[in-house]
Image 1 (cartoon, rainbow, N blue to C red):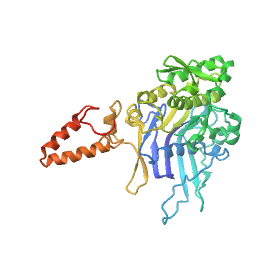
Image 2: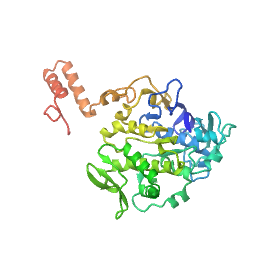
Image 3: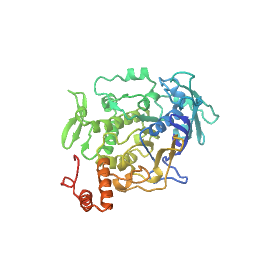
Image 4: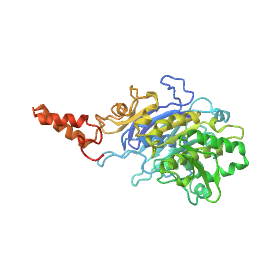
Length: 415
């Protein structure tokens, strides 16, 4: 299924918000050339992660109610002395895929989830708002079905490189919830490649497909051919010509390979035997897509993922101007605050695709008035005021400061 829109009422920091999302095959007004990417920008605490969580809850609510999900402080809380908010509502308008239509879903579906706040305490209660057009519970009961495939990764994602027990993880969390648990719990371990890729050695075509898919999204400095180092029980990557076990890679590569490998593993789990992994549809939610990534890779990561997984609908959050400049304005949402301090989501009519970092940072998406260091800017403004008052030496010093090359005597402060 694809989420065509998400409506939020009194969830986390939002009073009311709606996002009309990009998804593969969208033909309506506002469709983007990059049809499977949604990028959420905004300040820390502005609600980017909340959008990802709200979407996951709305789609998977029936499965979450019996899978170990703990709804901790999800209903919007207000300041002391104001009337408490008793519940929140999450609504997704979805487009079923071919598999879901064969199972009985006709036309668009509306998925509704409600969370109720207790009179005391922080644990909310998840309930369902049932509608006649949402017969999805039987589909969600099948953990290994590609129907309603949703995977999510929080900003604290990591790969477990020591002992990892899939059976223990699944006993503590239902599989549907396990796929998105990282959005709600800190330091949820992702499955190592060894837990699923080694099992494909008896299915050589699927093994090759999974290895090639991983290789297609890696930066040019890293190659992966599926070689397994038996003595270390790890897969080898070729990093700048040097065979390197996964655990010896940098944190940035491990973080990226970790969640992409976990995603491909889940695709392997749900893909019918004669269906390509790249043909599976669903929703993938990734908080801080630029996490630990070098700027050179931030420029490429979203286009490569979009191309490698054309049938998946991605929703990313980011703080990176390089990531923002890799998509169209139709793909970008920005979180902000209204006059009452309540979080809102909006789209603005400003193009940043292909623009420089300086241009993007000074755009409405990031709202900076300068990209200079604050101490440097303060010193420069003071010199400018002195020069404006007729102090010739200040004018000369100001010119030296703003025109001096990096590392020269005209600069101040550490490099």
